[in-house]
Amino acid sequence: MAATLRHRGPDDGTVHVDGPVGLGFRRLAIIDVAGGAQPIFNEDRSKAVIFNGEIYNFRPITERLKQLGHRFQTHSDSETIIHAYEEYGPDCVLHLRGMFAFAVWDASKQELFLARDRVGIKPLYYRWDGSTFSFASEIKALLADPAARREIDPLALDEYLTYLYVPAPRTIFQGIRKLPPGHTITVTRTGPGEPREYWDLRFQPTRGMDEEEAARLLYEKLRESVSIHLESEVPLGAFLSGGIDSSAVVGIMSELMDQPVNTASIGFRDQAFDELPYARAMARRFHANPYEKTVDASAAAILDQLAWHYDEPFADSSMVPTYYVSEVARERVTVCLSGDGGDENFAGYRRYRLDFWENRFRSVMPRSLRRPVFGALGAAYPKLDWMPRVFRAKTTLQNLALDPERGYFHTVSWLSPEKKRKLYREPLRRALADYDSFSVLDAHFKKTEGWDPLARIQYVDIKTFLVDDILTKVDRASMAHSLEVRVPLLDHEVMEFAASLPSSYKLHGSTQKYVLKKAVRKLVGDETLSRTKMGFSVPLARWFRGELKPLFEERMFAKDAFVGELFEVAPIRTWWDRHQSGVSDFAPELWALLVLETWGRRFLRG
Image 1 (cartoon, rainbow, N blue to C red):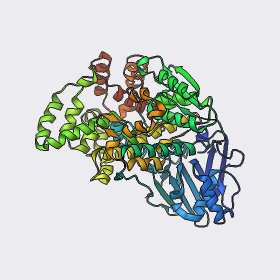
Image 2: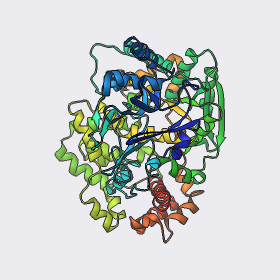
Image 3: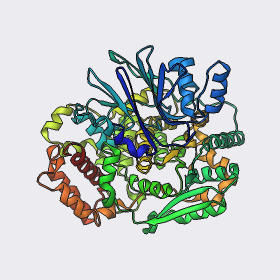
Image 4: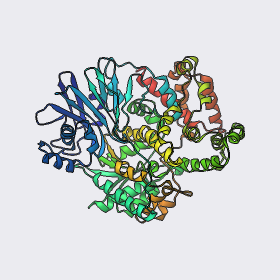
């Protein structure tokens, strides 16, 4: 199991066995390189910890624990956890500020205690078969056990085709689960208890804070967060795309560091997707030490590696450039800071603005009129993928016929229920029965009743899309290259402050990230704040008419295609032909199917 995760920790590997428990660890040495090997024990060796991540406040916690009588043998943040567990028990997680997944074996109690950080920056999977409990940072380590059954969870498959990722707590495999962010779980000889939530994010606007004060306090929070994320004994740098979030992180780093910031950026030959000129401008502005490459970001060349590293079907196409920029960064540094989290915290996605206007319209037109009028219009309106975005109104018309929760679900869904019904073969339809993948979002919407509409969808995204798409994408792509990525905008104190601000400070008229832009305007400049958001996207539609075309046809239309066991071929052929004609854009659906086929061949057929 540990050998399977060598890419996550190439510097060292250990296995510790104590009675009924075996702990395997792979180390990427960053703090206390000389003395921080794991597992780390308490004073009488009755407790041991293995840990993935970073504890950014370990120095003040260590001093506090020393005052309480604890004796430390190393200078690592890992040892802080074991003594905090000694002192506070399961509540130790409340004292930790950072990204982490860890396991504490308490021999005196014969208990195993597992914890995952508040936001889910670090992954943690587990499996219980009634007699053996196992856990790991990646699914493939659990599959190293020959007893692990490789059976698809049909509900997870349906969720994957809906969202392009598998939301927690499910995984694509029956019997393997993700520990949700902000949760712990305790395992005894009789098996695991129920996961226990220790942190949640509440959107409760603070009264009386004007825009100027909010912007000033936010900048102080960002500066403090970036500062604690700089702790490292190995080369450290940052991803730089030239967008607001990564530019703000690099700009603050340049103020705090006494040497130029090492930045990593990639460009593409297709100028419509190339952000390198913007990254270059920001690097000059902050007198950074830039490292950049223009890459031929070939999805075909790395598709099999991606399927291996992601373990389960995952179809966010920005996994491709994320993999390449991680590869570029690792040539110079071992640790990278990123700007991930800015969109979720400060309402940066275009869909937030559209949802705002949809809700304004819903408030003035009763549901009894909306449903028949816009339902009919949405059904009749053509899918104009080839037209400019302003004319592609089908999704908006369909949303207006729905309630806010269902409307947002429709916005973030990729394969609609209608498409899935045509696609699924009869055995899969029977297995799913009347399952509705909206239930994933609905569980989180129910916790936000009474909140304003923007806060509700931000919360839902933080609990689903952020952790199981964005953070999963970055973790697997970076760890594939043994690169640690830190996310200062997702420090829980930054997030709690952002959640305390009124929604109008985030989405202000048509201006998104309003308070963030106000906070970093002097730092990054007006040009960066005003340019159109690009995102980390790739020309996927064109790739399927070019370099991915032979690969797709070879795998998807083979007589022994894996997806043929699950899906009807006819709708796939229809989507493919319409995409090749240029009339429609089915790139997301085709990519999801190609990833699933590649994953199935690797993990189910060996």
